[in-house]
Length: 202
Image 1 (tube, rainbow, N blue to C red):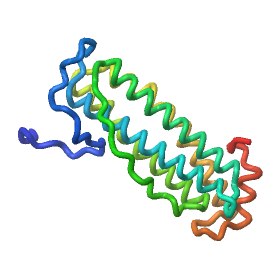
Image 2: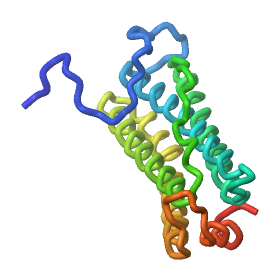
Image 3: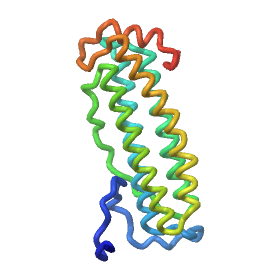
Image 4: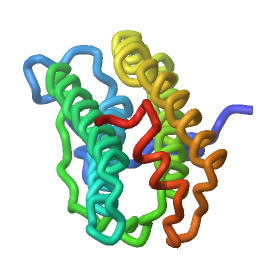
């Protein structure tokens, strides 16, 4: 049974309520459906928001009462990757003649996370949510006759997340194996992870 006209399908794609409904004014715009433009804008904004959250986590592990410099460097590195991806997505949107709607910066809401295990779990959840949104974005582009966007999203944004998810899974396994826990007692396991885990930057 077909979906009634005017009713939107349930989607995990971030919505851009401020996005202009008519957007055909750009001279370089070609075959960029309005729904795809809005989704690119929404996902780009989501990536910026998540980069800010990762930077907040990196700062939490730099505090003198936590003092896990390599864990902090790892989250800082992830924040830079996230920021670069957000810039690349918005750059692609501009190349296609689309418009980005800037948004208010929200408080990251992860200031209380100072233990390694919940921070890694938060990052894993974030990457999975983003991967789901990117899959939907790629499918949306194909449904609207925009195979170029579908291909770019798949190769430049979705594929790199596979390696990042595997690395994160390995880090979580190591953290649990050496006794890291979810509360903020910050035991010896976190120190061992910070000092000996090869995946963490030196």
